[in-house]
Length: 261
Image (cartoon, rainbow, N blue to C red; front, side, top):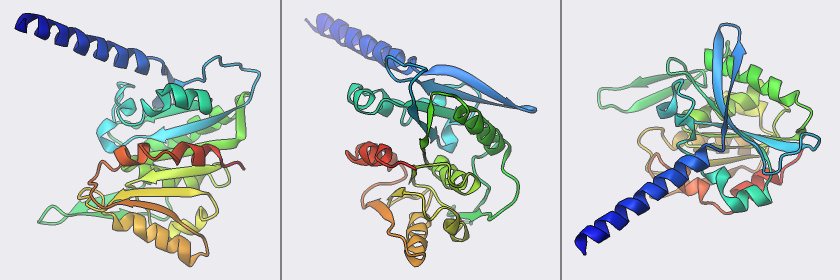
């Protein structure tokens, strides 16, 4: 009996792993070459995709732990969200997960640590984009030239390093995005005025010991100073993985796709 139970359990685990792998394989592989740099991405097309129709497009930026060139790790967080049958049915959209190279970063930020290991983030207000950001900017422009992209419904979101990259994208490509969401990210408050009019939902865990929650609350405060009404959700018990709670928000995707230019 015990042997049967173990055999059944192993079979269930194998089937679960195969289903997971099969699901993520629905994201096609692609790359965009920008001069000497190449940015890899995974892309999910709507079911029954028709190139003669217009579709919204979502760019999702991963965190620093998913950097590389395997064109796979960037799907670790968020990839399954857009694969849910209910999501694909209710929000038929093109979803793109680019991958930042291991030797680069999405945003222009200097990260330092003190003797106790506390991290400090110094976000720049100008300067050239990083190599991965530069390639990403070119890749986005290339996608927006496709005849099946609804340019009034272009969205971006990201977590941690990707949340920081999301905010940098908003200022580098003003008037491009209909809405955005940033999870446990951050930016220099001096940059906020450059994207204050873009609908933005900010998420952060109050116990985050990797990226301080103060980075997100400072952005929300600055939006208030600028006369905007910030959309900020804080999770009192969440640490750095606040994206788990953010992805579980039932209104996240309805809100995102409900915004139009």
